[in-house]
Image 1 (cartoon, one colour):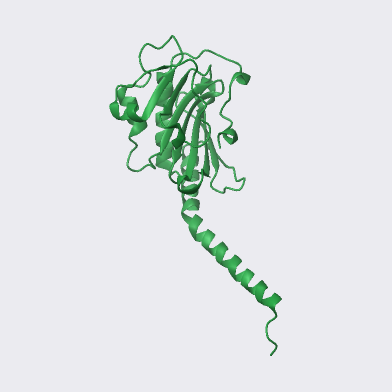
Image 2 (tube, helix red, strand yellow; image 1 turned 45 degrees about the vertical axis):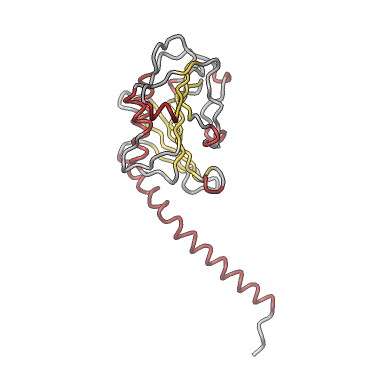
Amino acid sequence: MNAMSPRMLAAGVFVVALTAQIVLHFFMTREKRRLLREIQRSVDKHMCRFSTRHRGDPTAFRIDGETFSQLPWNLQSHGAVGQGPGLSYLMELTFSSLGGMLDMAVLPRDRKAVSGKTNVCPSPAREFPSGLPDFDTVYEVLAATPQLSTSPLSPGLAKKFLKWPGDTIAPQSVLAWRDPAGCHLRVHLPKMPNWSTIEYLLMLGEDFCATLPTPVLAPLSAAGGADFDRLR
């Protein structure tokens, strides 16, 4: 029997390595695919619209829906942003009908801990502490509107930003702001969200929007909106 040629040997090694990679990828993404199916079933049950946004990430998705008061919203999720141990999932909730001038933002004090877009600080702006020390140590509430005399975040609402229920994926950071494209809440998660995390973000978003003063309208071209691809 003739000995196997170097070319055939190399081809065999390549096939084995490729097969191993495919099998490994299948097992590593199995939980993500299960979560995606769970999310899609829950979305269908709540009469919302679900769509996937692959672009190299099979776990990226978008949900469109309305609140009980018929306030439209959309939620977009994109996996694995950042580098190295800081990899996270980016999820953003937008209420597009609540747009106005960039006059309000809730931002982590440590901007370096947040990957992606962070230039959502109103200018000039005044800080409005929530009154909850644990929250005010980590976050700052900034506003540039004469309509506010007290913080739009009560201690109770600040606690909801900070303490997420045990069945959710607690975020590494939370950002919230209003600009011409709407009112936004963006969270960085250590792993892919489950449906409980999405539900809690929707509830938090509604509570946050309910505290905001009437927006000062501005053209969409005046500021960066919630174009999700520009936030990555």
